[in-house]
Image 1 (cartoon, rainbow, N blue to C red):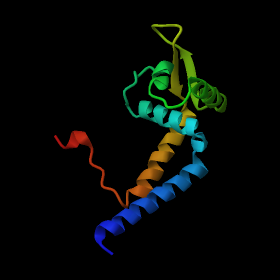
Image 2: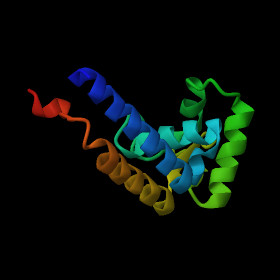
Image 3: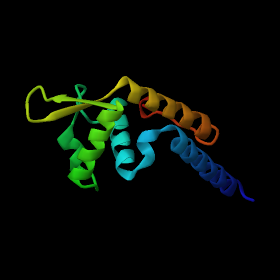
Length: 132
């Protein structure tokens, strides 16, 4: 077997292993809407494009391929499960700010560690800012 084929098999095996870990360990990922919101919240928590004070609800809806109702229901569920806190926007009181709770941040940290443990064997990650 050629080296590239072996590497691809290892990567796919790692992805399957990570998916299994996610199914067993990350409750927010049990639905498409939960997965979408979880990764939006992770993007924000890891310094993505959202403001530091919280993720505006309208920004979550903008690029979603899910209905607004679906997202709102899942957000309500996340709040009830203690994964997300919401508050009124500081500038616009009609806008809701969303913030992952310590419980959600702990899950995200476990997820990152699992990714690094499972996929770290197969991938070399180089940060952009270290290249310049």
